[in-house]
Length: 133
Image (cartoon, rainbow, N blue to C red; front, side):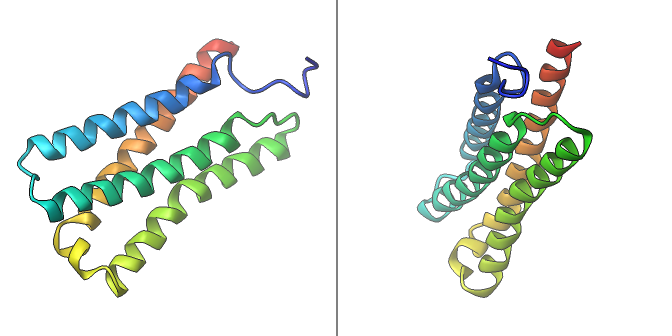
């Protein structure tokens, strides 16, 4: 592989696994804290799915090779947008049409899971930086 075609990081899938594991742990903690009614379980599933979708999009952009400084900045901005916009759209939908999920706490869980996915992204970035020098 040439330098331009290499994926960033030595083990790029590890970052996605860290994100999925942290979201699974956050979901388990929510269930362990007594969120066991069917509505609450649906709220957990909704928030975890939205957060994981955003994290996967950000991960794909994050592993894409960027050879110039402007490409790296563009990739970083795209990763932020792909991470935050699904959560913002989901919060807007909860306000307009998702009254049952909103009442079950999906909005709060979205914020918690978004922050969990963001923490996983920071961990992934640290892991990639320690591998590259």
